[in-house]
Length: 72
Image (tube, rainbow, N blue to C red):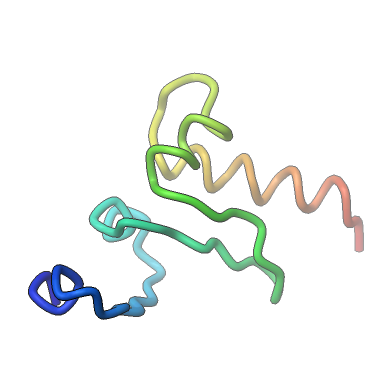
């Protein structure tokens, strides 16, 4: 898929494994049918992982913020 992406083709990858997302150029994090995060892994970590713990911590922060703002 690197060759396709290098040629300008969009490659869509879905995964439930956050460590795989580190290899993507751009992420859209979907939770409860809503896009709660968008950007490169570095951008998402910079915006949502204040402690520097990584992409998983940023994901957890995004989910917790969404749940706080949209109680069920």
